[in-house]
Structure formats: C-alpha cells, structure tokens
Image (cartoon, rainbow, N blue to C red; front, side, top):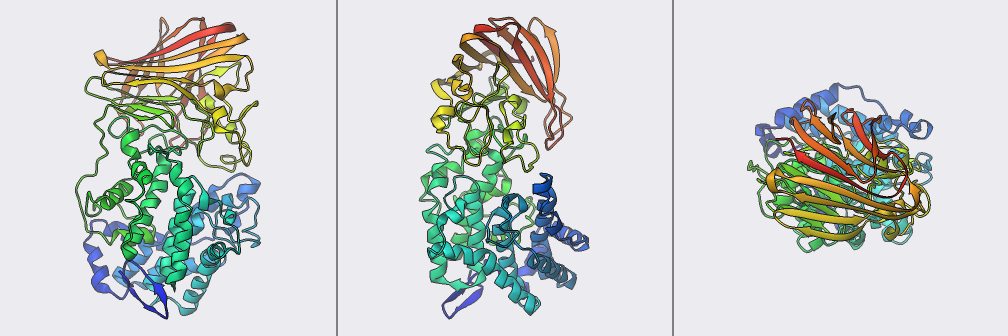
Length: 611
C-alpha cells in the first residue's frame, strides 16, 4: 500500500495510513489486544523519561551493559504510544513521543555502548550501525510516516535529518564505494546481526522518502551480501546460534520478506532453499512437544516465538494472519506489519512425527519422545567456533516427558566479558557447565595448543576443534551416534583417544547410554560430568536419582535414574555452578573422577525413566 504519493521521483511508503485515517485506526479498537496496548501506552506515558547517556561508559568502567541498554530500549520502543494517539487523539501520548525524540536527538550515537568498545560512536568520530540503531531508525521512520501531520514541524525535520545521519548516509557511502563494505561487518556476517541490521535499515529506507533508484541500490547491496548468512545454515537448516537466536535471526529475515511483499509484491523467500529449511528449524530441533535443547546462547526454557511461527506460515501460505491471542510488540514497525493481515485464530503448533532428526553436517542429532518411551535426547558434536559458541563438543540433553532433567543450562546475563577475551572464564560458557569430560583438570579448548580464550578474531581452522562423526544409525526403535571429541582437548598432549557415543534404545520404556572411551600415552585423571537442575539422591551401587520438583519454570515434576559404570574406580562429588542465570536456579555438576590416574578408561552413563 502506497500511503504517501510519489512525487519528483521520491518514493515514501508505509504499510498503514497516517493518523488522520480514522476509518483505519478505529478498527483496531475491536481487537482483543487493544486494551493491552492502551495499558502499556499509559504506563509509558506515566513513567519518568531518562536519558541513557549518563550510563554509556559503564560497560567500559564496570562491565555493566544492562543499565544503558535497558534505557535505550525503553526510549525507542514506542508502538503502544503511537497506537494510543492514533485511536484516541489524546495529546499526552503525542507529547511523550516528542519528548522521547528530543532525548534521542541528544544522543551522540544510536548504537548501544556494548557495541562501541572503541568509543568512536560516542566521540562522534564515526557513525556506527548495530542491531539497536537499525531498529531505532525503523521505529523513527515509521512513526514519522504516521504522525507527520501532528508532530512539531521543527522536531519532525530534525528527526528526519537524524535518520539520514545515523542510517541512510553511512549505508549509501558503502553503496557508492566511498566506504568499504567492511565498515559494517554484518553486511557479510554469518549470524543474527546480518538480517536484524538489514531489516531495520530496509524498514527505514522505504519510509524516509528516497528516489526508487537509491532504494533499489541499497536492497541490491543487502541481498548480494546474504550468502554468508544463508550458507551458515548449511544444507540442513541448522541454526548454530541456538533456538533463542533463531527467533531474532530467521524472524527478521521473515520480516524482510513480509515487508517487501507488502511494499511491491516481490518474493525473497521461496527462491532460497536454504532459508526454507532454516525457517523449519524449530520442528527439526524439537525433542518433545514444547521441549527444545538449550544449545549455545539459549535460554534454558527456549521456545520459538509464536509470532515468528505464524509469520512464517503466512508467508508459506499456510495461514491468513495472526492470532488475537498474541500480544502486539512494542515496536511500531512490527505493529504496522501485523495490521496488514486479517485475524486468524487457528492454532499454531510445532509438530514433527518423525522419531528423530539428523543434522549430519552440523553434527547434531535429536531422538524424540514416542509412545514407546517418555525419554528424548539431543546430542551434539559440532565445533568450538560456532556463533554464540559454548565449548561443548559431545554435549547432550535428556528430557523426561518433555522436561529437561540432564540439561545444558544455557547462557547467563550478558556483561562486557560475555563477548570479550574472558568469555570462557564463565562456567556456563566453557565446558565445565556441560555434561562433557574434564582431563587432568583441564577443560575443552576453542583453539590449537592452548586452553580456551576469546581473542578478537579466532582464526583457528574449524577442523582442528571439531567433533568428528564416526558413525550414526537411527531407526524407529533405536538410535546410535558416535563422535571423536578429542580435538576439543588438543592442548592435552598425552591424549591419544577420546570417543563419545550415545545409544537410545526405546524398548521397555527406553534407555539412553552415553559412553566415553579414552586412552592416554601417560597416566591421566579423567572426570565425567552430568549437569542438572534437579535434586540428586545417591542410592548406592553407582546409582543416582535425579528429581525435578516441578516448582519452577513451566516444567512438571519428573524423575530420571542414572547408573554409572566405569572400568576404573571413581570418586563422586557435586559442585554448584554459582553464576547468575535468568531464573536464578542452582545448577548442579555431578563429577565422576577417577580415584587414580589411568592410561585407559571406559565410563558409561545409563539413564532410565523411573517406573
């Protein structure tokens, strides 16, 4: 829908009309989520507006990035305020938006401080574009389209100039060859930054008012540089950033596809087979209904966003629009995109009737819960240079009736260290917080010849820090996978062999056996580990009961029996990983450490459901 007439070759488009079209905006009042939007708008209007700028340097001084980031988010997410003004005409909402714009104009840069480590943006030495500034541009450009008739004219003009300064001009400098593409690493990036930044910029350029030729040049630059991002999913649609980032990553690609479809009808999805597989990642990584493995920087209770699933199904022609049960986002651009579709209240379910999924290229296997067994498991080899990597070759997650009992605890809160040189000092990110071995007290590495650390650019060839898939057989009744994970411990010169296998036998209620076989050129200490949030009861005879109490998260109480068999006597101990996580739950590490050093060892972890 062209809501602004093209003049003098300028295209200025928005997918909804401006605030004067009350026939359009009044219809929103009957939506099930309308009152929720107004409630949020009233809360925003009543809250004190504070500039984030005084907190900008905290990330450098103390490592705290949340104080600036939280206030930055509050400032730019104004969708409920825009809707409230358009549907009620109450000027308090408009005045609040204008106050926010004045604060935004006072910021030297639109990026968050955690993404400006050199302070070039803060010192206004260079215009940077990150995830947050791209979205800021999208929000402002969309709001200007809708509220132009009523905004203060001087403020409107200044905000439009700011859009060109912070977003349009630096991108066009790359288009015109005045700046190298490397100025914005995400143009050729392999992770979520690529589609998120591009979606924000595309939303901005369509709405700010540009000649069509300029718009097309920017779109060409962006789509010519999507190859690395698409290639990162491989031919199997595996998202190595984990499910939490899949929603933002593939979700933003889907938003681009929907935006351009609404803009001029073009289709940027159906001709991309790798993306068509990538957007089906939730179905393929699912362990049981509602249960997904928290691999890499995931929330431990990660689930695919229903909004993204429904947008995907709209674009695939499987549904007509969004359910009224989904809350509107706080971003006005997202609200506008959604308002172009009718209400469709059909259920949106993630289903996969296949008993297993295999991502052979990525080295990840999922064996699902079936009628024969309440157990399900995700087993990953992978490599230790993945995007949002955790050093976790050979990690596994076991769920009982869709409740993870042997877990990957996911990520903690982000700080300056999370993506800095000290990343792998975190016991959530290094291999200590995963159900993988420790040898001579040393953890897995992500480089050659030394213990893990996070240099600015880790150029270690992936093959040197990668699990090698030795064998896999998956059938309806059983699944077997074996990896050589020794390359994750290449800094330990005495290690000659380290193979890990997982056997899932679904018969008689199911049994999962994880086996480590190691050999050394000289005697070494070997330690197996199991990570859980559950209560641990030592039963004797090398058996342990893991009991999840059902009092936290959205997980019902479940139990899992663990039996450990070892060719070498071991000592058992429990450590609590004391790092802040989203739910502040204790994370227990069960350690099975050889009583004496050895040259060869076979250690088995046998899991069975409690009948």
